[in-house]
Length: 97
Length: 154
Image 1 (cartoon, rainbow over the protein chains, first blue to last red):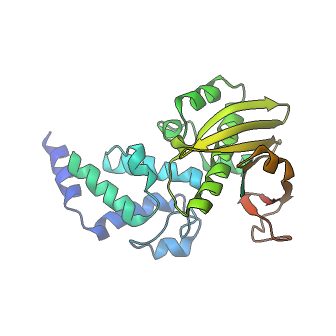
Image 2: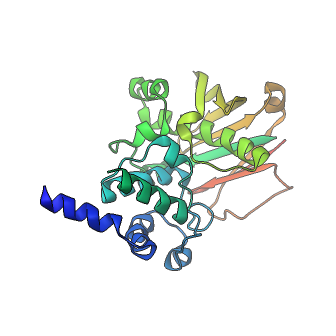
């Protein structure tokens, strides 16, 4: 599967900025604070800053799983409350592939 | 310490598709999913269990000052539904929380406390408003969602 292999390599070598850029449209679907969304950065908190409803946090997790073709276990999900944690988890799961 | 959580059922139907693949697995235990799938109103059961988890979590996170998103580890037990009220408890990080819920046509509201005696003393005000910043008489716990604001007093 050369095409898939190449896609994975690209994802694994992504910078934080590139990962944030991929994360932004996902959280945009659920963020109620549009100003915080525009200024999204590593320390942005999904609930406190973006005002994502906690029931929608699971949608963010499911969307991230689909976008990056990874599985986020419950233990990882527990700490996925902000951008930097999300990026750390995405990088971990991509590296495990 | 007490906690509470309100879900505006119309808003929830708009914002969340709990039938989405993988959704329930990330939020509910196998036993809770069984309660949902065997209920004649699965939507109501989803949001009833969710408000139980949220109201218990709010007490725990305020006491421990720790935050995490671990809905499956907030385990709902002993749920009894009678007419439009429900009682139950939630186990989380080795702590037990007692809950009492009101199931209305447009919303579900749950209160939580560490003892049933404390639960009996809670006073509740549910206000239909989108002005979520309103506060009256220094409530112990506040929850808002969609068209509803809930203020509860210990």
